[in-house]
Image (cartoon, rainbow, N blue to C red):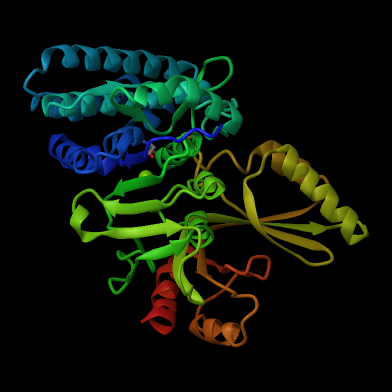
Length: 453
Ligand code: ASP
Ligand code: MG
């Protein structure tokens, strides 16, 4: 017998949407305007995760105190606007004490596991406060610990969700509660099989929302942020950028992968698996509308958007022994795989491999990708060249590797830019250029003008 589930919308609010009391109230109004919203996923208030990440890196006592004071001020600004601040104030102070204790430990013995335990407090605090804001508006709500459902592996800082476990746990722990009250939970955080707190990587709250949407077979996932949808490029670089009203899952996920900041890169995978439409809008201006991401957009254009991913490193490996190309490639990729190197774009010739290292996602930061042990191992097999301070500019679109005339049109826009590497062909949805970091914005401006305006 197939069960008919009630209509469920999962709504996620990002850091700026829960930054302070007024932002929380605007977000509350959005929830109350749509009775289909049953589950709310929250980020930490804006700026909080950055402070916690700094504390987790291990600071000296004075700096530690400064950061904790800043954190306390953010929380107490919200608490002071509540009608009944006492009980929640104590609860938040208790979490701030935890933070202080963990930060002290991090100063002498930092670790990835400790870091996740520490940074998870941002979402714990914002979700507790948001419950109070809703209760004071007379809404029946329940705070729910996302770690009970978001099961991950133990890759702290950028943990991978275990989809089947999440589905089972959500069915048992979450679905029955959705019928009783509006559920408020945390994005970004999860727990491994042993019960340790993990995180899904920076910006991971979007991913939590779609993972829970998938597990509950939701009808829609709403992502409320500070921009009214997805644009043809970052409007801060190109003010003429246009909002995209409807976009396909594959195009939007390429945009996220290649640096468009609106969505966490993995967000659309669960939505795609269950064909759940995702809406992106601004909690500051909900009436401005937004972007609908769905299975198939109508009349997909050749050129959809331009994205940029900064802080890229180019790693070039040159064969020194007269090895056949296949053996050289196999050896090098075996080493990279053993070191869990986060890379995506690759070009090869018979005796060289060039690849782009991308570690912009992990909570623990970029520093750990090119470790000394990786470089030592690579250097004993080949000649290694590393080039930093690069940016990847990507054109996202449809049938890019098939349609005639595309290269001519796009390359004309790149004429005056010192391109370091080009990737085209593996996906018909993207065409990527690696450039020196300081020419990226210019390249985007020229390409936007010639392809979109
Ligand atoms: N608070 C986390 C971060 O800042 C997760 C999120 O906001 O999505 O990365
Ligand atoms: Mg975000």
